[in-house]
Image (cartoon, rainbow, N blue to C red):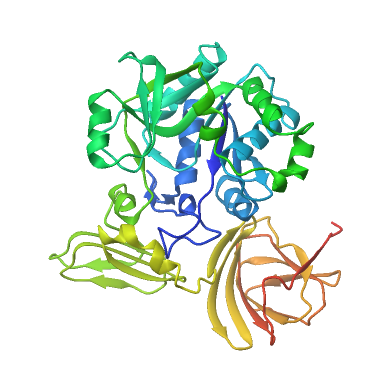
Length: 438
């Protein structure tokens, strides 16, 4: 299988665990068989590999998410980076050109596009595999997956098939309706549109060249910021006459709010939590190093992270976005390709951060013009390079760097560091990267 996973979104509806860098698909709350926790993107990637270990998986995403993807899935997963947001048609066109021009995928090969964050069972990806096979056989120019609806949802678009067969010609599409209209669609045999479709690579490549003036992937990437913002549905799907839908009747959930997300949790809590026996339908996700105690609560979600603390009635949690928009959302936690960082304290002329580096990884070799830094190693072993001079470090060592000097740290084992930034103007933009001779 050649699969493009669309990874977008921002951190509004699942605040405070998500932010502008850490979207919902990276929150690790799903318990695995060994007792550890995985995120939506890790779960989806694992399920794909279980169905097809040889699958070619490419994640189409923004630059801000690349580090989190590599942190959670490793360096081998292919990432097609969008230089800026231009909606789903340009993103899919760019990813398709990437598969053809960079990965060498044949124009005759089927390609499947799906969101990176559905909560589904294994049969979903077995159906996706079948969808790709049908597209490869030329059953239609576009093959869609239609999800059997379980209730009259107002959140999804609907596909109306021409008949009740497993594979049907698509009669028409309907936008997100009100509840009564949704009930009428369902009576007519309509299916939810979950944004999953398949095509032969040459089909979308041809559509891209018809709508965009470009030569190849590199050229499309270079002019990406000039492209018109348009969805794949509007640009392609709704104008295509040769289109079929394959039914899927298994579990499928869009975990876009705290209410729906907690329904998929294996247990009532993640992190250090205590609840008394009078609590009912309460879920807690705690990323802080302090305990949370809940007593006498009912139908409540509690979520705590360095970004803030949410205590909400589950139904009301769906209306969080306008309140989060009012907050000054500084990024207090982020995953990087080399590890992660968590802001511990902010003062007027200092910031203290706890940094965790994965074994065998390092920060970029960089400098700052307007701040000094002090690193205190609290666990692990590694090496620092400061202005070209390398030295081993271990727990208890302290490294001081003046503004302007180049520096990095390399982890031989997992390495935990307290970084204190000192200066009158501390900014994420005050960073210059350099090549490191190794």
